[in-house]
Image (cartoon, helix red, strand yellow):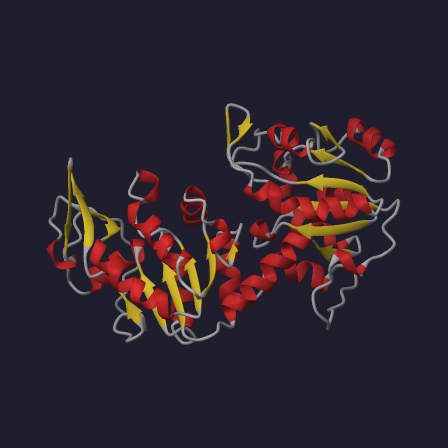
Length: 385
C-alpha cells in the first residue's frame, strides 16, 4: 500500500462538510473508572461528546470504538448507560460478527452505535492487520479522538488509517494544541514533575530543563536524587537505574524538596531529606518544600504539572492538593496531566481555575518528549485524506 506524507497541519474532521450519510468510525477515549457497574468519573466521556455530537448533528452514521480497563473482559456497557442520556446511541456487546453487521446496516444518519471493548479482540493489542482491515470495512471515514492512547501501536489507532481517509477529532485537537503550549512555553516557565514513572520522566526532564526556567522534582525521581547525593532513603521507592550520569544531578534549574514526609511503621513525621532512617520511606514532599515551590508558582507565566508530589493512592494527598490550590491562585497558564494529579484538582472543584487538564498520562509524556505519537504518524502518513 502506497503511503503519502502530508505536508500541512493535522487534518481535522471539522474540515469535512460532506458528512451526511457517511459512516464515520470514531476511536474515542472512554477508559473511565467503573465500580459495581457504575461510572465513577465522567471526565473522559465529557471530552468525547463534542466530536460525537458534531458528527451526529451533521448527519453522519457514527461507529464508536473504545477500550476500558486492563482486563479484555471488561465491558463498555456502563459507559453506554451514560452516553445514551446524551446521544442517540445503541450499544452492541460485540466487535465483529453478524450482529454487528446487522446493526451497521440498519444505522440511520444522525445516530451512533457503541461497540464492545475493542481490546476484547486479541487483534487489537497485537495490531493485527486483518483485524484492522475488518474494522475499516465498517466505515467510510476514520477519526482518531483518543489522544490518551495514541502512543499505542494498536489496530484501532494505527491500523485503520491504512485503509480509510483519516482525521482527528475535537478532543484530540484540544490536547494537541494545549500540549504544544507546554512544548513552547511562555517564560518564566515552571515544570513540576512528580509521581512514580521516573524512567519515562527522566529523559523528558533532561530535555525540558533546557527550555524551562525551573523544574521542581518530587516523587520517585526526587528519591533518585537523594540516593545520588548519598542520603539514606530507607524503604522509599527508587528507580532501577541510578542518576549518577544525568545532566539533571547538579543542574542549577532543578529544585528538590527541602523537607519530606516519611513513614516508619505507624509513625509519620516531617524531616529533611538527609535525615531519613533505614526503617522509613518518603511518602510526600514536606510543607517547607510547598512554600518554596509556591514562590516559583506565583512568578511563572507557564506551569506544566505531571504527577502527584507524594504517594497519592496511599492517602498522602495533602501536599498535592495544596500545590493545586497554589496553582489555582496563580496568574500563570497551567497545563496538567496524570490521573492522580487531575483527580486532586477535581476533588477540590478547581477545574475552571486551570488552563487545561489533560486526559492523557503516558501519551502526554511521550508527546511532550517527541512532539508526536504513533497515532499521529499513522494518520499523517497512511490516512488517505
